[in-house]
Length: 477
Ligand SMILES: *Cc1c(COP(=O)(O)O)cnc(C)c1O
Image (cartoon, rainbow, N blue to C red; front, side):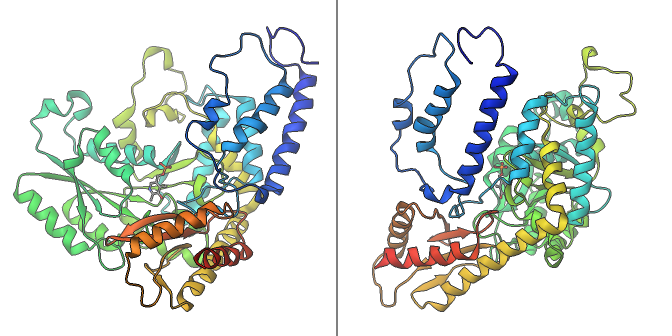
């Protein structure tokens, strides 16, 4: 088997043989993942140095490829699926999602048009509607799947720009004698908002960061004042981005109050809930979406806290026509006879070719159901609160932000310590991460170095945060 020159694809027999082998590998990997260090202990360039400088001319035996994968690639893997991965906002993949990915690659359809795979288009409509219902978003919200929240938000900001009606799409920004456009977000908004503004010609100066209260939420009155002042100065406000679950602390901007201002000032309201939005699947967490009826668009990432493998981000927009107006551009070779009756998703974004992402989303929703997903997310929140209590009960530790979801911001502050707390905590985090048992990340709040511990992995249980606390304490001693 698998011998000789490879002038055609792998045989069906070999596919089965190696396929079964790799499924066994994947299953055992997930089952024994805790034997790995979450963060690999390697230096920059080390993985590259183990790989040949030039590509092989003759095809290799598949066993050798699997072997190299284990010997060369795995040692450089940061194990996002590890239950001790509590850094950033972790994305863990569930098994139904993994199997969905297998079929996505197997079918390999390109869902650019309805015709190029009717199931891909229609399943995207159905699954985005299902998720909308599970979250409790308004029925008029229309969903589209992109790769990441950064790209979802880019499209939302493009809609806000399009809605201004200056025909920027035809004339470009320079062709209009436009005043300076301005977008507002919190100083805690994700960097992707600024990147979107950079890409769309709004520029970084076109993004104004609004100050926050002591719980890291936009102060609506400040927003109103800044918008009015900008208007007086001849700047044109066009969009506000509010966040549900900011990156540093998962704070929730006051959507309702911000929405009122957007309504008064006629501004597009985009809500970035990439990480935390899926928590609204949990019935008692629905309150996080209070005021969402003011939103023109909202992004949620099933690839974050919903256990769908990366990548899968959904943008919901109130008026899909604006998205289409901004991006639809169909040359002759893309026209079909059914265009008037179907959704051709390439009309609603930058990319033409589209992966069949709705398939893995469908697998995950069907397998767990709304109840199952809510159960896992709820358990993550409860587990995180156990850790929060441990921090609060220890007088040498300090909780640095409220915990609305499952992200805990804390620092070590031993009684009577007179040294630099930022340095102390930065070093502490290094030591914790070196153990390889857990991985934490940090942020800065009001100039203070703060350690973040996030519980949003499908494999993270109470024992893992209890262990995390033990590791933290043992590193201090
Ligand atoms: C993770 C995150 C993003 C960026 O998500 P990508 O999908 O990686 O682009 C943006 N905003 C918030 C609030 C996030 O949590």
